Length: 175
Image (cartoon, rainbow, N blue to C red; front, side):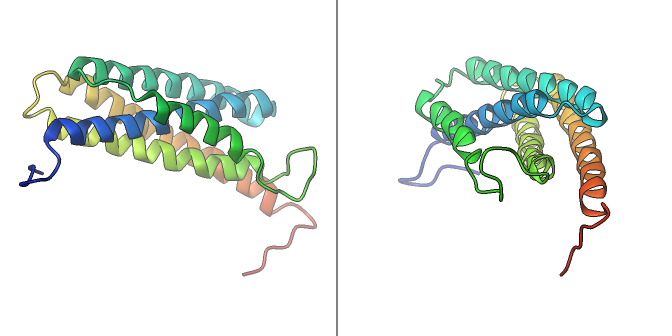
């Protein structure tokens, strides 16, 4: 995409794009950490811990990309995402003081959206690396492959949670 007369230049586009993804990575890292703390079910614990650690590492990698490109972190976006993740916990779930059984299912779905977005980020930066020598294609391919693995992990966690929750005795699902 090229800048048009009066339109944003490449640096502005990168600044907005990468800072928006950093905000998303911040919310995703917070969600992943919370899922580790709140889901002590052995069926999920080990995979959630590994996933959370990778998501935190991926956020650090994104910070590295911003630094490599000389793009400043827009802290207001990071803070807003952090706060938004906290506010998302207040959604009504049919329970006043404790989590509903749907929590792990809904959180897996939110996590999948974030990881999918992250995979698209790495794919976009990989394409941009053809013209931007400060981007490391080998590292970006590694990050993309890890994101694709994370998608498989989240999909499997979601499948198990959906099976356990929605096919439990006494649970009826209607269209």
